[in-house]
Length: 83
Image 1 (tube, helix red, strand yellow):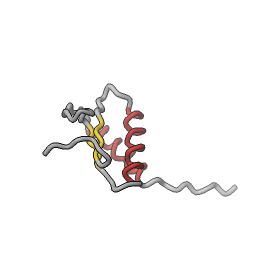
Image 2 (image 1 turned 135 degrees about the vertical axis):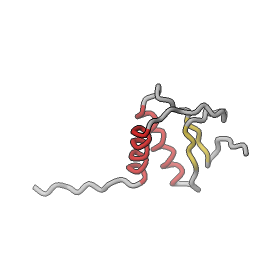
Image 3 (image 1 turned 90 degrees about the vertical axis):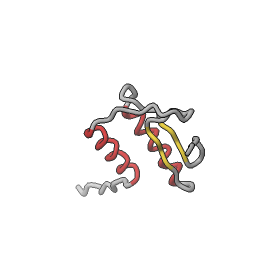
């Protein structure tokens, strides 16, 4: 099966040499876009031309990515302080 980037598929060529914030900003942008359309899938470790380049990710970093995605999808409402 061959997949290309389109309105429902986004490739992110992210490696540990790239800034983590870059990935989170990029994910936030595309999660928002997919939420406002027909949905979609983000593939991490694939270059824009569709080549699988992979990525190295330990369990701690994987948990951090998952937590950030959860915070994008399910933002917490902050209660104003009552002083």
